[in-house]
Structures are given as C-alpha cells and as structure tokens.
Length: 156
Image (cartoon, rainbow, N blue to C red):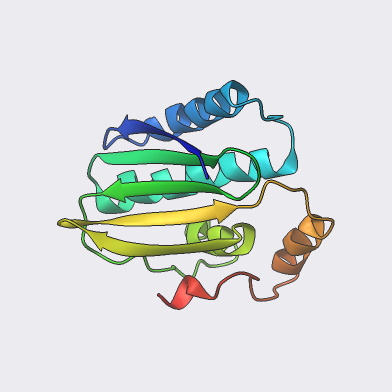
C-alpha cells in the first residue's frame, strides 16, 4: 500500500499549536480531502491535542508527521518529542480549562498509543476516514460523564 508521509518541525512554543492545525488543514486539502468532513475536523483536533502535549508538557521541540494511505485506511498522526516521560492522563476538575487532552484522544481516535524513540517518545493516533453515525453519541457520552470509548490506552 502506498502512503504519503509529510512532517512539520514544531518549536517548543504554545503558539506552534495553531500553526500545526493550519498545516494539517493544508495537507488535507492538498490530498483532496474534504476539510469539513467529520474525520478531518477530528484529525485537526487530535493534532492540536498531541502537539499541545508535546510543547507544553515535554517542553521541547517536536516533529509532527501525517501518514495518509492512498486508497482506503486510517490516517495516522505521530508527534515525536524529546521527553522520555510517558504520556499520562490528568484528571481535570469539572470547571478546569485544561487537562482533558488524552481523554479526547482516547475518545476520538480509532487507536492511539506511544513508544520510546531515541531519548524521547513518539505518540500516535489513527482516525478512520469515515463519518461514523455514532460520532455525536461519543461526545454525548463524555458530556454525560461516561467513560471514554477507545483503546483503553489511558492507562498506558
């Protein structure tokens, strides 16, 4: 199977998160994707969360990679940073404005995980290129306090 791989160097600056979102939207357009499709919007949100984690929690430059299979198959997002610390979910208070990133990743990605890479780590997620009918139900479940649906990788 042929894949297109593109990557973006991300500085250790929270302002880079917006640049990463714009970059992935541009790549989606270049690849012929509908940027308003549900999976495309989900992909942009997941990029935002993973890049935020890298620049805020790892505090180091990162590399964002988009892996797009030609034909069918999930789109993969990878973010490599220089921190060897495993990603760990935070348990945000109901009124907190941060601390839910990995919960969102677990809820929205078809799969996600991480592995050590060099002296740092690589965090990845995959999004199916479909608009599942139950996508809205997943958001409702989270808003109602239900446990996120996903891989269960929150314990990783």
